[in-house]
Length: 388
Image 1 (cartoon, rainbow, N blue to C red):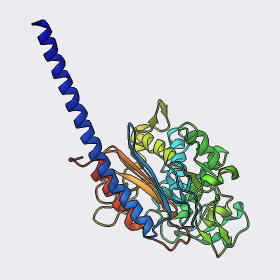
Image 2: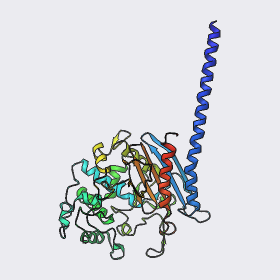
Image 3: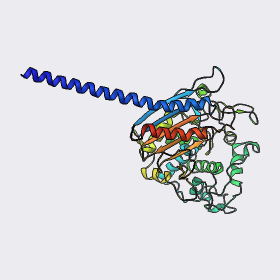
Image 4: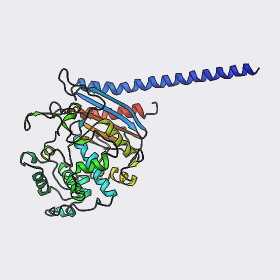
């Protein structure tokens, strides 16, 4: 009788094991089928000329849940294929990954406050209401500065570029109008250097990138990494060459590749670690980069002038948003002119890194504005919808 009971028990365990295995197989097959939708979206975009190649990485607090590379460095026959570790010029993502992050770190250490005036750190910033411009204004893009100036063609050095930015007249009174501005972020990069005594690239590397083991994140990548860096535009107007391995943004190039608004290069795994740290309230693998209070302060929408948080953008409600329609109102992110973006959603515990070189061969190609929100919506459908 005992042997019969033992046999029955073993039989039931075997059946249960097979049922669990079958469920796991069906679930895995379903997940693969759903992620194929993401693959198809990106392949279709490449085929339609939106960009020659791309890397998509999706993750949450616990790690990476989807990571895939597509296409090639260029449209040329025989071009190097993109892989999961390809390095991209992330352009204006520099504003959050480097500049805003260094301001957050300085804030946590009591060296700066959003309500501090710019003139407290740059004494010459005092005419035409400039004495009222605060760090908060620069982070929110409400400092009254124009969006961009072609200073690169009018200057010959980094120091001259900085001087021209400092002298730029305000277009509106500070704190009254939103105007996305590279110039404000250049000023923030200069302020980081004046407070710390070291350039922003060194500060970001020491206090943000190295602790997070972001070993492929840097300004001015060395020549021996060139084969791992996706090229950007064929510049026919100023540098008259393929921009490959050095910064695409002209003003950042004039600033020796190191600026508060652009110049940073990175890859998807590094940015995944950064995003995971932000999702976890400023900490990753036992290393604390920011306090959780600082993360909340800098990533929450500030007022009704715009969708901006401090440095970061938040999801636009009721209109086009690069975040798409399915990320939550708590999500925050940023795009880069070269065709890059990062979006982080603490409410749904998910982040999406999307890296392309859509400016190759020329910057006028804007097809990515359709692909990006569709990708974000599809990611939420695949990984966070109730039937997933």
